[in-house]
Length: 323
Image (cartoon, rainbow, N blue to C red; front, side, top):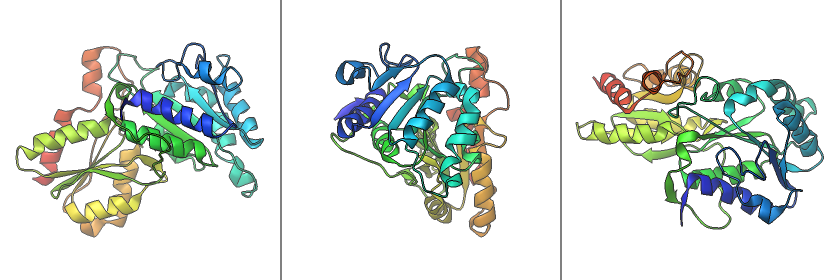
């Protein structure tokens, strides 16, 4: 059936709460208000305030509470209102959540999912527009999952909640209203598997989250000029499906990476390095990147458009790559 991205996320949470009595959700304003983006609206009425819990404004506090609950067998789904707010809970996330399974020698499970949303194009300015996924890929111990479509959102979030290790599930402001066909009932998408969203032969555009749609739009414009671009949605950033990356690069022999987080030390930098280290003989050109500029995200809409990637930048970079 057709759903918005927001409805697909809610459907995954609802299905898992019905299936497993240990699944609970908490965060700031997620119960009575329905969350900043209204994703969880209506779940309080169905599941009550023992499973849908509004917390104080203390990200470090309620993520710490989630870690303790997960260690006792609960499956918390925690909503961080903005991705930016993860920074005030970095000790809990990076020093506790990411390391507990390893430090226990694998004797404990930590089934905790953090949902959060980020990204620009909304005029939310420097402290409410960041995509910080590279920070969480850098420190081992947390699976980092993105989804670009409603079907992937439902399937990947369901897999995340069912996983026995920590998962950071990153949503994007621009995606909540998009619509698509979503399977009804129980439905999962495996964590750690990329998806070829468009097949092509001249170059590969690797992307994830909202920028997948930008890459697909650019690919259509390139096709009108005789350039056949493959678009690969990475979907999971950690673990990375490098087998699919290698298969695509070995076919097209040219690669570029598109994302709206910063260029320096970002996912694109890491992926470009891995491709050039492991697949150098397959490349007919250097790996190129189209990313957010190395600047805070501006409040001004005009400046925000300059700072963030665009379809035009993707098209011009692709033309440079094939020439």
